[in-house]
Image 1 (cartoon, rainbow, N blue to C red):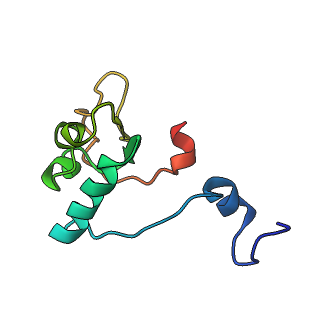
Image 2: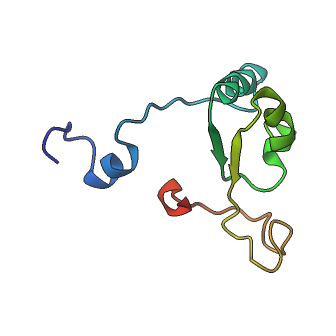
Length: 103
């Protein structure tokens, strides 16, 4: 794609143009604390862990909403169903979904 380094595919650029990225180890206290500090300054948090993982990490909606009133918390479960929601028979299975498919 013209104007972009050759290491980035058009697909990558279409999903990530203008974004900044950071890698955090949320299982470590310092990583989880930095995630909480970022959430406190953010308009939205989107996650696609299995149900309960963000709560165990101290990053669930109930905790983060107190840090940032009005926070939009988007929790994706690719294997959830309209009938069962996040408590269905396959919601604890792992699955990968592109954030572009969330919209």
